[in-house]
Amino acid sequence: MTPPPITPDDPAAWSRALGFSLDALALNRKGLVSPEQLGGFGGDMFRSIGLSLVFIGAAVAIACLAKPWWRWLAVLGQLGFATFFIVQGAQSYLDHTRKQVLSVQGKPQFFGGYRHSMIVKVGDGKTFTFPERTNGQDTESLFPPDRRYRFYYLRYSGSALSVEPVRESP
Image (cartoon, rainbow, N blue to C red; front, side, top):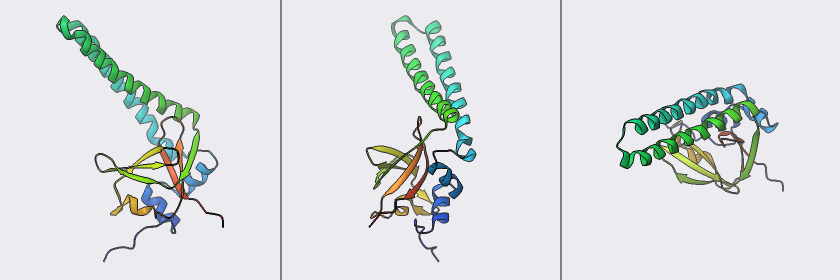
């Protein structure tokens, strides 16, 4: 027997399916971040810094060992990758230290992502990534199309924290 679909009408089940708690949502409404929501960002920051050091080391090694005719092209490529990871690490650091929560609301549009993910576009073009399937249900089906939603996210990395349906006033 197939379980009934999860909808926003059951806030506890809906929030669990999307990976956040109602307590975290309550904090996000106040512009605050729960400790559980920030838990992974310290690891992201150190991972990004570590990867940037690997690419900087590769750039130095290439500069020392490679043939002169393509050395600088390879070094620039490695430094480009390093810069990408430095920016990601800086965003995680700022999110972790400043803990600024922003929100955007609107009717979500869904696009296929990569590696079993779903890109959700809301409001003025803000995008979020969610798993393609949640608890055996397509993520898109968790959001009835006739409703507007408010997405809470971290200011610098843009990572989604929580989401709630917006109550339409009559």
